[in-house]
Image 1 (tube, rainbow, N blue to C red):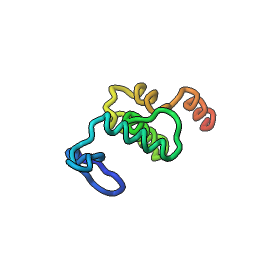
Image 2 (image 1 turned 45 degrees about the vertical axis):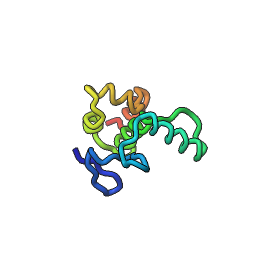
Image 3 (image 1 turned 180 degrees about the horizontal axis):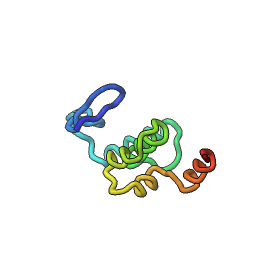
Image 4 (image 1 turned 135 degrees about the vertical axis):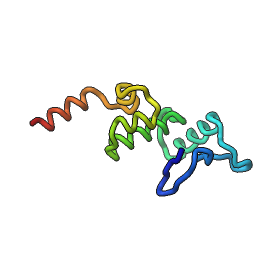
Length: 104
């Protein structure tokens, strides 16, 4: 499977986060510790972790880059769109607001 990051192509066996010494993939716990450190360094409060990255990717793809919900759903491996909507924080109120804004 091919992934794209800032116009660079990487393959699934090339990890986004690797250990400095071994070059091996970081485990979830090590990455969680790094994310905790990074968020503290930039002054973010709250709970952040590996799952935050995944949810943020889904949100950015759908809300900021306007990708189709089925595409985002497929990438995240969800079985239906309702799961994806909850996952990335699309609320019924937002859907209702959209209907009010675009009324034909």
